[in-house]
Image 1 (cartoon, rainbow, N blue to C red):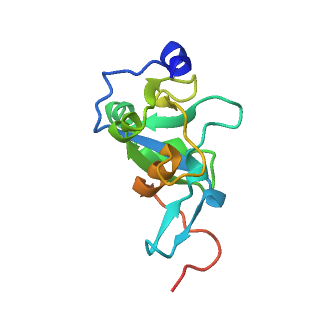
Image 2: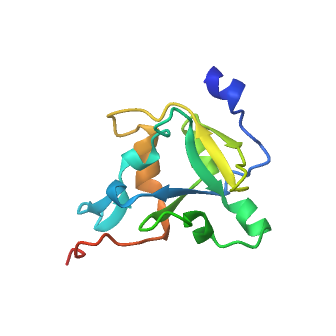
Length: 144
């Protein structure tokens, strides 16, 4: 994990119980019949396509700024918002590093190998543990 430790070191001031919000596009969630619920796919928790670590938004910053979690969905019509905890990310050998953007002070990254293919891969664990904060059902009808 030296790349992450060197470039995106873990910030211990972010408590393990802090919520990390992840924007989920509609093509990255589905109805899981085994779980009998809509949930994000593991692909929703991969690193960004440009090679940067997975983007998240810190609940603690949003609360401090008196902002609703849904504010990070601005400009992302149809997206939903899911939450995992910083502790879960760290338990899967990920760093949690604030990386504010000029347009978004709550932006942070989760850096580490997200894994491929196996059921214990971090991205799979994140997808299974994610809790909807804002859920926008897909346009097709919901399962009955």
